Image (cartoon, rainbow, N blue to C red; front, side, top):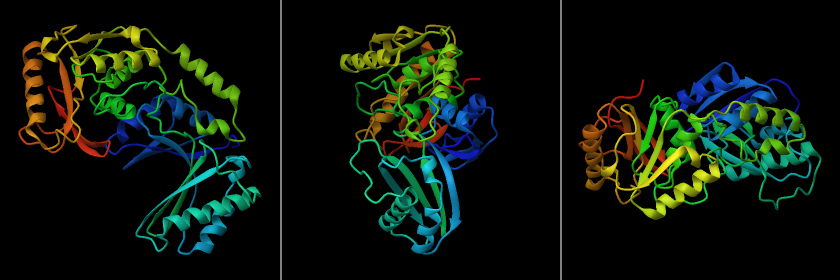
Length: 369
């Protein structure tokens, strides 16, 4: 890829577009536009690398190659073959095309994927592309109302894969959603944090990464590193700059769980993330916890899963935490993630999906300032 101005798109879970846009503005210093499910921005290689390195909330960062009206396969093949694939794909790199269609004449996703794949092979001048690889380059094709949008993925694995999740527990929360919930509630690492049902530790780990200003993408590989125009010196300089920006958290981060297996998983994951020294782990039920400071923020994601969906136990857990919060954490703000909808609970702050299940962020107190 040449170092030219491009249009980029951060794919985001619906509900988190605004917080993703803000973090992109903060780290990239670019103008952004939000739409449902994503954030559009422009830039060059520096901005692309920075977005992958620093975005805590986005699922992927893609480059938008072209968009055009299309109602037949010959037109799709012809226009796709003209795109500058050689800037992004080496001739020996395997490619996977993913297509979606909505209210379009071309609605056979398999044939769309095959047509675009053939067009890529023609553009690259290859006849027998390598398809046996665990790390293919992903190309995204979206048809809406006979309008075709073609993008190329720069991230590789989804960005929630930070590289630190060694062990899992029930009801895992994606790292991008955990960070998004913290940001959405206004918590930016300036006050103490507590999770009384920490499970594998995702919320506490993401809180520590935010408080320490550690780049979430510093421990992983990205698809753009295999592009023909990849600039290793630029990438290394951005990583070095990110490391210099790290800081010692000036707050207390506490994670508790009464399950010793879950707590061991949380400790293991926090060590892999490089933040174990900043998290105090306690094997105890949340009822035994006490605040580390007069003010702070409590966020928990109990192991609800399908078992608690639409059931009374979820409400009972919320009410128990709410009573403890009001009695012992009166000046702490907080929230709790539970299945949605549930009757008898406060109006949700935010609704989204986690692992295919509809969930909501319910307030334990006021949102942080």
